[in-house]
Image (cartoon, rainbow, N blue to C red; front, side, top):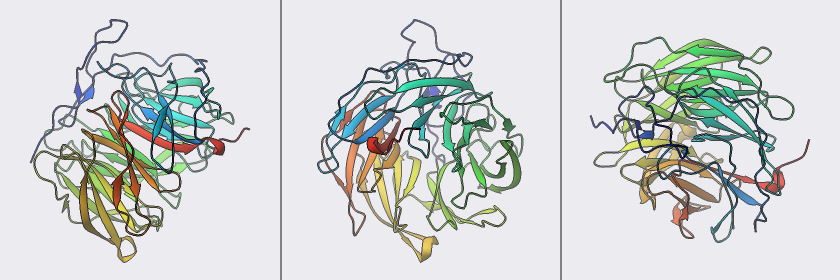
Length: 405
């Protein structure tokens, strides 16, 4: 089994000159080390307004503590016809915003602060570019790597990668975050081969809204929780075991809600899983090859809104694989693999209408844009790669969808 470099490699020093310290690690693609800190008090910093040429916008995640990294969350606009991307101002005042999630209202975006003393930050979005950092809250764990907003819009769910835990924060009417209401550590089962402990990499609500799934790479397990929407507490209802050493990283659901597709980082496989909405039980199937050669670390699945096609980002092979989704989501058939147009495609995202796909390429510091074929789902490069330092996350939204309270 191929092993990737250790996740948190020291890549540089902070601009302020502080030395970097490494959080708990496991074999896997590198993330920069991050200095420990406590979550800061509520911050109120406004970025300079921007006059961007299009209402179709991008938000870009990066590592601020990495040598050659960014200085905050990038903003940009893009032309939905040509795929051309225009840079906007950077939202400063956020540390290591390596993953981003939009509130259902479109008014607020949330970022992980992926550091040893992890935090999550809320940012109020404005159509005119006057985005404002609302404040940060501690996650109670190390290295948060993923977060998502519950469909109710009232709870933020975060995965602490470094310490292998999940946490819940309440979301206020203005989008700001309250103190966490619950933290659950993954103390069982034991870590997988070569792992030093649990490493939760993703947390997401199921399409039916009835359960929350947490994907833990360190112990080869996907946990199912039920969220108490009144008190913001998680209760475990089941867990699904992957084969030892699989390293599950990220799953995406078919829109029908009965099947999910799981990218396994360490053994370079994908797994089609069945899901029972009544019980919350996830049932992994037989691991499948990604069809890539050499050292490759699958990063993320993306499923089209109509459920006909799925896409997989491959780091190392530096490609995007297209699958036909068949039998109502119960089968994947590999169609082709195209170059990602950059080095280490860490995360991929659709435009709101599904007509474009964006790939954030971490090592080349670029975002590539693909047109998605309406009939066949084929990916065609369009426009020039957009430069952004340590591009690790891309999120697309429409500024005219940002409504005011």
